[in-house]
Image (cartoon, rainbow, N blue to C red; front, side, top):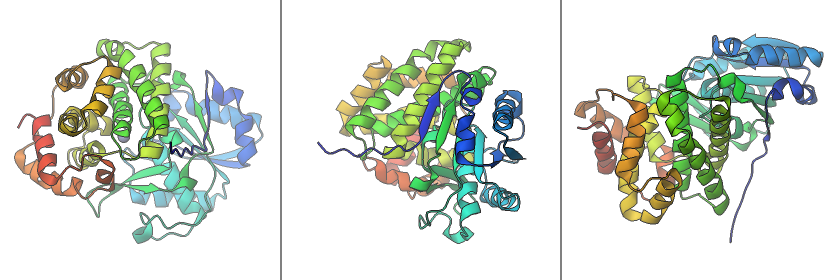
Length: 367
Ligand SMILES: [Zn+2]
């Protein structure tokens, strides 16, 4: 048995953990920069809790609330300039994947001089501003990954910065911030987490330990399917989805994602389809291709979901996704050559070629 496991983020998952663990902030710094989107961190109460915790610890803070969804490289550089101008020594990300991913790039760029052309090179020094992440959606798992995914206009897709120094020091996870999350975002993020766990099971880097976490994550998400369908989630359901998404984040921090994410990036870049939804639209089609070569892996995934066939998975997903977007054969001809070049394609044990990618896109959209 060979097994490597590295997850340096301290995870605290509990009701009111931000207020009850305010000492975590002062252990890491004296002046914090909050990194958020425009409004959700204010509406869901997370920002008020963080400010109360910082005040309790006599800490100073500044707020950078300019992170858009699918953050750009320019946003990361702007945030880094703001961090440097304000001499902050702690970065606190509050939000879904976008603020958390932007915060990682900001903490790197504020600590090291990196030119834009070298941003995705992987050649970085050791310096980084320490981070605490507070997820307010249950999907990305970014609070426990070393990835920062940014919109890359030069490549017309999303590209990730990946480096172990980008693991947050602490993740404070409280499902109460998700109680008023809109249903579309709730469903899309749950499907993103499911996709992370499933793709983690189908990665060449999967291990016995990541499999255990992935199966647990898949089971917890599947148990919420009825609630997601009815669009009525209790705090307990929210807690289960948050637990599942954090586990799935730990999985992909080891396994990476696979072709589903590579293909989904084009749907987001060109059609503005939400990231998790894009994965959900493609997941069954990908599993159908994979099933032919590694049926035992596919069976384990379906079994954990309480399903028997990929067709049942397709229905499971369609019940949550509703009407699909109109994607044409011309669109797909543009996306496939981009997807095949993505790094995550290399994680697939079944090495899909461009023709198979085109087939998956076509099946997914009924073309
Ligand atoms: Zn994802």
